[in-house]
Length: 111
Image (cartoon, rainbow, N blue to C red; front, side, top):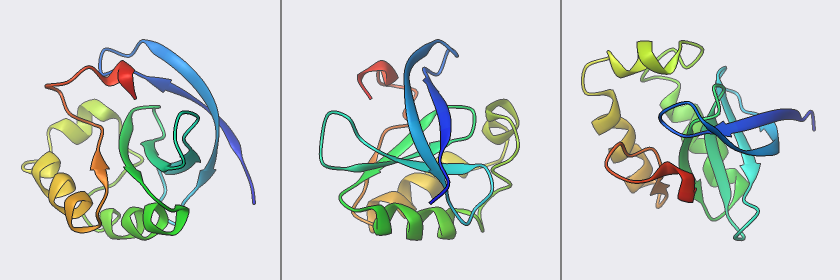
C-alpha cells in the first residue's frame, strides 16, 4: 500500500513526530500505526491527530463515514468554521469505538 510521510502537529501547529501514513478512501484523511500502542490512528493531512482505533479497518471505515461530513482537503482553520463538525466527528468516533484525540481541551502532544 502507498505510504506518505506525515508530520504530526499540535493544535498550535508545532510538529512533534513524523510517521509513515497511508491514504484512506476519503481525501485529506490518513491512517498510521501508533508507535506507542497497538492501535491505528486517523489524522488530517495537515498532521492534526483525530482518533485512535484498535484496527486499521476500524480507522478506514470511520474515515469513509467522516467523508460525508466535510471536505477534509480543506485546512484545519476552514474545518473549524463548519458548524457542529467537531461534535459530529466525536459522535462518529464514539459509535465506532474509537478514542477522540482532536480535543482543544487537552494537550495534543500526548498523542
